[in-house]
Image (cartoon, rainbow, N blue to C red; front, side, top):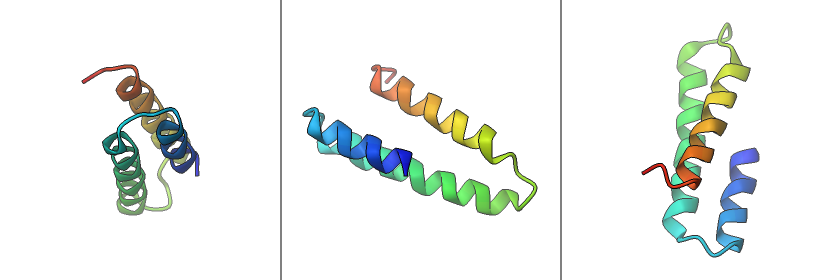
Length: 62
């Protein structure tokens, strides 16, 4: 949900659509990683890493 809100916010702030689509791809990757890791995965760690990656991308990390 946080990534979807961030994607909508990026569009509202005038970012290119590719930024929003990239955020949604991150969300799909996050779900896939959690599913592959199984029930014992540290969900908080994956969410934190994803959030930090999004911040890095938005700050112009590429």
